[in-house]
Image 1 (cartoon, helix red, strand yellow):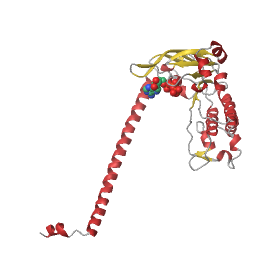
Image 2 (cartoon, rainbow, N blue to C red):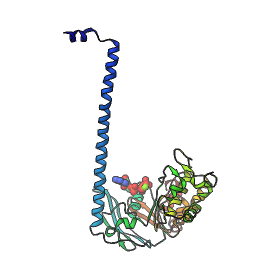
Image 3 (cartoon, rainbow, N blue to C red):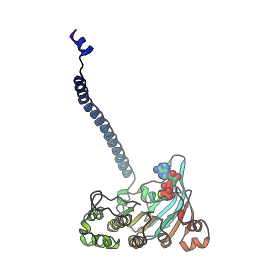
Image 4 (cartoon, rainbow, N blue to C red):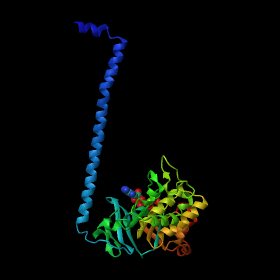
Length: 314
Ligand SMILES: Nc1ncnc2c1ncn2[C@@H]1O[C@H](COP(=O)(O)OP(=O)(O)OP(=O)(O)O)[C@@H](O)[C@H]1O
Ligand SMILES: [Mg+2]
């Protein structure tokens, strides 16, 4: 009976507030628990996928992958490579080329033509549907990829820099490098040109809490990192960012230093890079539409000539 009265009329404003408050106290942990639940589910799913990846990787490594790379000369051949990301949607339709050690190959062509895909195959991140990628005559399909990748350098458009000092960022691929080697890379990539102006030099912090580097400075830092790593084969996705002429000149020089003596595949946006390449491959719709040096292709007045004339499209 008493309860009835209570419900009827005696819920004061204070009661209501404390009820809401208590309800809040009760609900918050439930909400949190369900959050933890979904986080846990995500984490476990992630773990599953990681395991899946690790298993496929090790399976692939075991089954008939007997070849290893102690040393690499740097010859790279594509023999009739066909590739698709999805079934029945072939992206590369028979790519053939033969690159000698130390040569620079510039990949040019319109968006979606297959440049990044070719670079991904050369880097062994993708596997062909048919045909062979040969490095020093060894089929990558029969090689232990980890042993290949230790000779490989990949420099992407906006390379990954982390919170820390400039020194730490450059040393990242080879923490055991000597001070001399570090200095060499820093000079070759013209990083000292701006670090000399910082009070802490190479020990300057970069990132959220440190100095903000310009686009050109970030690129030079990424190049110094790649020079220090000293790979035999280099995959380079040139940044498109518009730089002032001074930065541009320094980056051209440091790129020249980086590619010296290394087999390089460069998805090229800079005219200077394309001009100085040993081979230019013009990719269109998953085919090599044209190949040659800059002078040869200009003389031909074909697709490259057109791309070159409408420079913005490269
Ligand atoms: N992960 C993927 N899954 C499915 N299709 C993809 C994937 N990556 C690329 N493609 C397709 O493959 C084709 C070639 O793409 P690719 O990235 O090699 O072109 P690109 O020449 O590098 O272009 P861009 O100049 O825009 O970088 C395109 O049709 C693209 O849509
Ligand atoms: Mg691309």
